[in-house]
Each structure stands twice: as C-alpha cells, then as structure tokens.
Image (cartoon, rainbow, N blue to C red; front, top):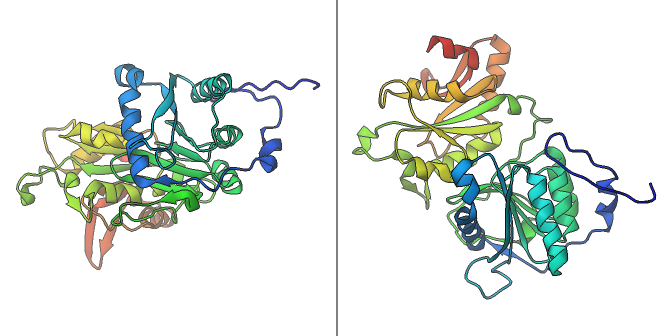
Length: 339
C-alpha cells in the first residue's frame, strides 16, 4: 500500500498495516516517576468522571492525566476523559485530541478500564506515554510488548489499595511501606491453560458474628483491608472475580468487579454465597475463598485444579492434615443444579 490506513475496534475490529513495525524505534523516558500516592489519587479522580458508566454501565472509559510526581499539583490532573462502548474508540479519541492540542505524552499517565492488550500497549507507546494503568487485567502479548518497551504497566487497579505492577517498576515509587509488591506473580492463559476457565468468588456475605457483627472483609490488617490482601493473591490465579456480599456493596465495588448478594435466605452461609456466584458465572469452574484469608496460597487454584484433573471429581477443597476447609474450593459449574 502506498498509503497505509489503520482502523481499530473491539472484538471485530480490523487493522491494516503492521502495528509492531514501530516498536523498535520507540524510546520512552526513564527520568519520570509515578508514586503510589499519585496512582491512588488518579483512581479516585477517574471514579468521579465516570458519568455514563454510573448511569448505564456497558461502556469503557479512558483518561489522560498529568503526573503529580512531575508537577506541583497535589494529585494527577485529568486532561481528557472519554467514555465509549469501544475501548479503542476511547483511546483513539484521546490520541487525536492530543495531536490537535499539541500535548506531549512523555510524562503523562494513561488510564483505561479495558484489558491491557498488545494494541493498547502499542498505542500508549506511540503516544510516548510511559505509564499505562487499567482496572482490568492483561494478555500475554500485552505483557511481552510492555516489557520490551519498558513501559510502566499497572493492572487490576480499581481502587482501595490494591494493584498489580506488571512491568517498568524502575519508574514506580512505593509510598506505603505496608503494601506488598505483587508484580512477581503473573499468570497467563497460554502458560496455565486453566486460568481462563475459572471464575474466582470472594465470600464476604457472612454476618461476622464471632467478631461482633462487623464486616470481616473490611477490617484492617497490616495497613490494608482483609479483602485487599485476598484480592491481590487471588486475582492472578483466576480469569475473573466476583464478590459475594450482603452489605456494604459500594465498598466492594471499588474493585471494579461484580458484587452479588445471596439469593437463598439472608446470611444463609457459604453455600448460599457459592450459589449466588455460580448463578452468574459463565466459566466451567468456580473457585471460592473467604474474604478474611490474607495469607491465601498463591498456587491454591492450581493445586485444586490438578486434583480435579487427576480424580475427575466434581469439586476439590483445601485440607490441613485431616481437617477439610470447604470455603477454599474449586467446583465444576454443573454442581449448581444440586445446591
């Protein structure tokens, strides 16, 4: 082609031309940093902008923000915010506005609600943006390209104090000593085939009777809520997360995931939570863990899945010695009919 035309879209989009051909020539700045406080401030600011999503849902949002680590502002200033049914449409709208306004992206932060795919990483790099943040996960190719470019890529950043730092950690500055860096445990569907077949369910629907009626998941432990510890360890092991809660829904929605209440009775116990999660999950397996398990093993689902493969059983549960722990389980979705 004498004149190359590039079009993009979600799912059914077509790309004419080789988006990879410019990768080797892209050099991102290494003299800029992003602090943990600035990241949390950005996430708070984005939530205030998501007008269409709050009213109707079913849209993606993208934002370009100034970096408070490089400017005098106390928190990142959002320069552009776009919501659209297609995440690529939102990205392209911001890229076009940057070009029209002559905005330099070399010290900016790009936020998206969509997955961190290879196309999203390439577009951020083409805009010379060194920081890419998403409340969703990533793909294997997205991670490989981000690592090659050295872009600082952060996922699962939906609010609270949790996030996953995937690449470019040399630009990131942690400001909360109690938080544990979690960029060392990354899983991909191609490397662990069972990942995309499992929905994770965090059980937070209990009464907390033994703790005086408090919501256990929201209690603080080592500087973070218990549910934050669980989410950080659980999310890399599964293809998606659902939270079962019968109170404080807005608190749990800060993760950017679906929150469901019991459909059987009221505070009927873990089986009711399992039923609620399994009723909305579409994946073949559902893995459950309680919201008050901050030391959840990072290979738990892999081990449970291995036992199901070996035995052909309908479910597997964790066990310590002779003591089973049914709330730590991996269950085939067909079990729903028996609950």
